Image (cartoon, rainbow, N blue to C red; front, side):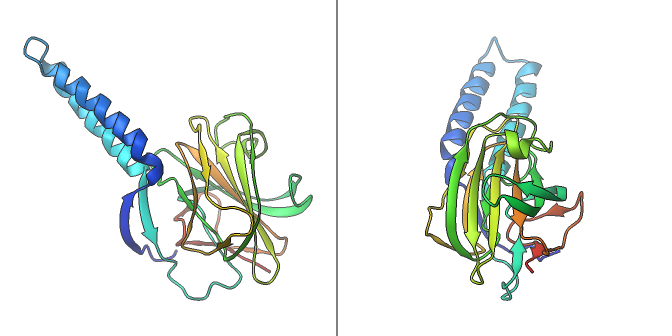
Length: 228
């Protein structure tokens, strides 16, 4: 789909403390295991595992600065998350809209970047956080039963799009940046979810969905739908 144009990649600010603690713990463990008298083949195995864990953690907290590759952004809904499409369906949305909506859900595994982007240009009209469970994020019930945050954006022509950040089985922190009244744009970060999780985007009926089940998408690069 969209061209993968990354300007620069840094570490997300949400990962600074976690990475510092993880690297410090791994460093101490490996220093101890290489002390004469303790050193052995097991030390090298632990070192290899430590480097693997460190690599996964760095990848998880990567913060790519992206630019949507088209200047035509009217009616376009861009993916908010890296991951795979696990749901495309018409549902009754009962928390805000109280009507029928099309929902497109993206599941993020441990190896995906977990920063989230705004899917449309507009104004933030609703932000809320709901406590809940921590079921596997690729299951349908996670959308309504897991801990989640809701961001509703009104586009320039008055259409409303909801982004729902959903915690997964391992996720224990959802970070949401916007406040009501904020102007938002494609290319801007919306928030971050720590560890395996899911992002649902609720669209008006009549929207043209541009992805299919099982398709891999990149946030801020791939179009998932066009508004009616």
